[in-house]
Image 1 (tube, rainbow, N blue to C red):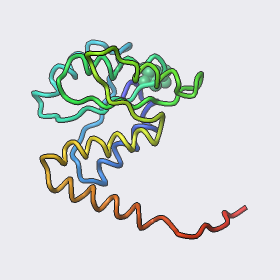
Image 2 (image 1 turned 30 degrees about the vertical axis):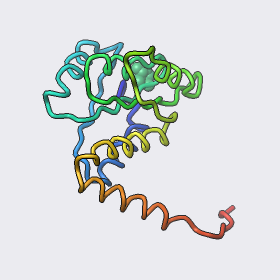
Image 3 (image 1 turned 60 degrees about the vertical axis):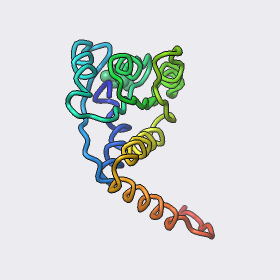
Image 4 (image 1 turned 180 degrees about the vertical axis):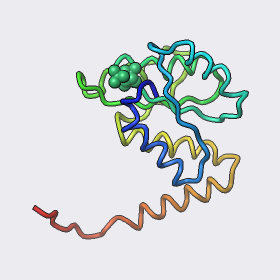
Length: 155
Ligand code: RP5
């Protein structure tokens, strides 16, 4: 993620990966404030054994696209909700990649962070039956949690 301030959102990706038993690391890597760290992170990600990168950033969110330009790993982008534009700036910055360098872009905020983790797990599950089983169980729990009849919320 691009900043400590992104962690509130990106923690949902980390928590989802943990729930699925997917080993992962969490790092602050800013395209603007720590460009050398970003280059080091992106250019060594594959050789360190990473399989998928989830990059969350807000505002002029260059991080996912810049990382994608420096690795062949799949990069999933999470637009973090900004104060000024409610994350529309983040979304447009991440989703509108010119043809040639793809970033798989998720929804703004918490939903995008959770779905980035689930999509990363789906990619890993292609070659990992344990993660496939964990995804199956996660979906089943989600289904079981949906009531058939709505109830009133407490006032
Ligand atoms: C981006 O700027 C980060 O991804 C963050 O979403 C945004 C604001 O960062 P802070 O000013 O809160 O550190 O680079």
